[in-house]
Amino acid sequence: MKPGHNYRIVTNNPLVRDILGQWYEIDYSDITYREVLVKVRDLIYAGHTLFTHPLSGSVKPNETPYKSILVSKVPGTYDMDGTELMSNAIIAFDKFKQLERHYADYHLRDFQLIDYSLLCSALDVDAVAGLSKRNPS
Amino acid sequence: MKLELGFIEIKDVQFSNECAVKDGILYVNPDQVKEFVYENDDVRQYLKSINFDIAKPGESVRITPVKDVIEPRVKVEGPGGVFPGVISKVDTVGSGRTHVLRGCAVVTAGKIVGFQEGIIDMTGPGADYTPFSKTLNVVMIVEPVEGTKQHDYERAVRFAGLRAATFLGELGRNVTPDEVKTFETYGIKEGLEKLPGLPRVGYLHMLQTQGLLHDTYVYGVDAKKIVATLLNPTETMDGAILSGNCVSACDKNTTYHHLNNPVVAELFEEHGKSINYVCNIITNENVYLADKQRSSDWAAKLAKLLDLDAVIVSEEGFGNPDADLIMNCVKNEKQGIKTVLITDEYAGQDGKSQSLADVSPLATAVVTGGNANMVINLPPMDKVIGTLDYVDIIAGGHAGSLQPDGSIDAELQIITGATNEMGFNRLSAR
Image 1 (cartoon, rainbow over the protein chains, first blue to last red):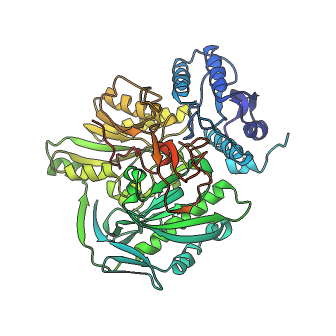
Image 2: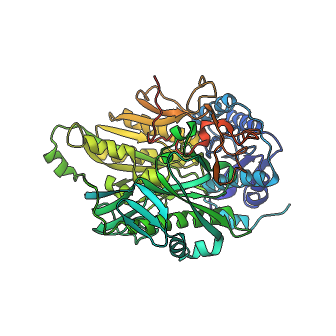
Image 3: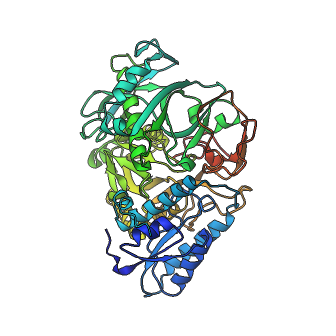
């Protein structure tokens, strides 16, 4: 597991908040996928470093409500590459047609799990073990 | 390293009281296959039921949700066995002789994460987009024990499919193949002596490795934990690389694709004629940006160390892997190694948007597998193997995708293998 002192997780995924919040700083809001991208872009503008790819996962931006992205906890040197990645991610998001989709609770749980497990792989967290330590807050 | 592949042409598959390959017909006793499949702890613990069905080319059959497709093979001479590190011991494979039941496949079907599995139509317009409408498919419909977590279910289904394919492959051990082909690559010095003057070409093979349910296995190792490394191309023909992921159906490399990698096949076709096919470099597609930098640095370093003149780069997935694709391109081009990229496109339903999430002016040679956002209509089929419950939320589907008459309006990405980024399909553009 990567140490928590340098990371902030920007997310709209309650599963990420509940599990990874035990070890990492969580910036959780009940916002859209696109709003998470914009929020992270603005953090990168402010000098934070981008640590994970904003389009992680095979689920397309218009097919899941959830997105979690890892950035540095404190601003440092301006992250030029991160800025470009975030701009490209927002362009990519906007080109996808916003499909009408109706999700049952178990669909949402699957989407949360995928987003959570992708972030775990970046943080070297055992995603399976984490699930058994879910904080029910 | 030298491998002989003995191809046994399978012309029909039938359920029977026995399991055998006779005169090109594969006879399958589902109970015997099931017994072998269940001799595995994960399968026993997590799979409540496995039912078998057969789907043949031209039949009015829809298979969904498809997890993996696997070709039955058996190692008959030489070290190791098929699917090393998972089914067989971890001995290095890729030499000796392997028999292939060509024309048939094991298809695993089951809802793991419902939105990430695909559709195979055996006839109609959908059939044109998937190579698995042309194979005789032994379909395993798999149900989990209640309460099974997705990652346990995925692993159990993966093992079940591989075990079934191993069992059926074994039936070809003592059958005389219809055709035998030999594949051989050379060591560095030997290659320079035998093929002087020919351009040295490698295959940079990117593996889907973004995390749980997004993984690929190499000799049983989760490939997100590797640094870029080398494989003899023939190792892939014995199942050294396995699919273990639940990603978009259209550009997922199934285990069948890894066994029959068209880039490997084409490079072997030209090996000794117009090129010296040196080796494969495998690398990953992790989500952590520092991992991307390390893996692409190492892949480029290996290419330089091998004095390659060119590399063919194939991708798996969209978005995050596009960054790895472009890094692999740029780093090799900058050190004078020419690159050709194979990808697919998410260019919007009208095809007018930028196709990839990352670009570079150095990416001057790009082959596309097609636009995964293209909308298609799949007419109803007489029979569904599996369930249509997930069509409206599967990747490429939307609310109302499934029509009352059983037809489906959706994006091409819903079809297994439709825009495969190894180039294993028949789409083209004029």
